[in-house]
Image (cartoon, rainbow, N blue to C red; front, side):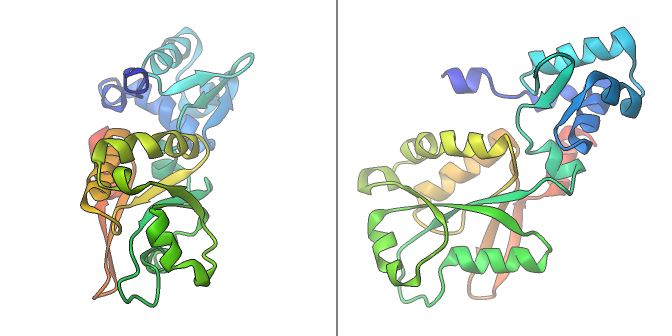
Length: 225
């Protein structure tokens, strides 16, 4: 698939110290900086910096934007690791009501808030049937609807959500939540989070506890930082 062929290859940046240093510098700048700013803040200079920026472009991690300006293709995971000012977006699931008074999404957002993680945008994947059961709560979320044959198909869910997820990755530190909905949906979210190095949470509703299935420390270890 074309998307997978052009996936950022984060495993390669940890193999060369200066490549990682340049990527980290871009992340600390909020994901975009010009050549002179990167040179000043990374300590990697001149032709050597040009080489590592070219390498990052070949790895589909960095894109050139105009004359002398470079941008991280996706702000997640690097801005999640290195830049606390980058706004956060939440990408979750919502299942059937089954007697719940509060949507699992609302529980997750509240628990994230206790960890000082506030989401500027909230996208939720659900089925029309589940959404109908929560309609009176006027939930302030952006919805992605998966129909009956999709919500039980891991591949279908993954391909349905990928375009919006990739769009969010370009501008936000994205957090995924695989708590709710169907088992295929949970698997699809885990696969996407593993592939794109996206932090992933799961909420134990009964105990009101949040667990990071893929944490900042996990991602840092994968990148060797």
